[in-house]
Image (cartoon, rainbow, N blue to C red; front, top):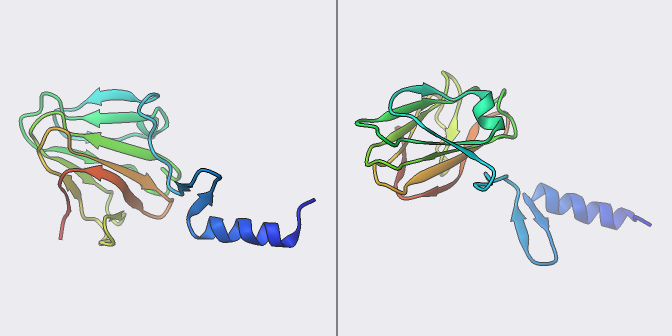
Length: 147
């Protein structure tokens, strides 16, 4: 039998952003399962599609000779999806939102500004759309947000 206190405790955990389990906590933001992801290499400007997000796809910059700008779909269209960009060449990767959208990185939520992954092999950024904005939820190396 479910009592009101059980429901209250469940909702409290949910609202705090964590699901409590017997073994610990699981982050509220989903993460990309690299075992199931496809990989695509881009050497120039590319617009990330909803199909890329659904797959899911890890986009890298193998073979790039300069910055690889990746334009993201609108956060509203991508709600609930996770995306990862991974540097496999020593070139930067810029994650660019559509005009008016936000990439929130460390609390910097200025609209229409890109997030850049430094050109060091092994650097990556994983971002999640909550339907309102993109949120950088994981990363490695140097990631910066345009001022």
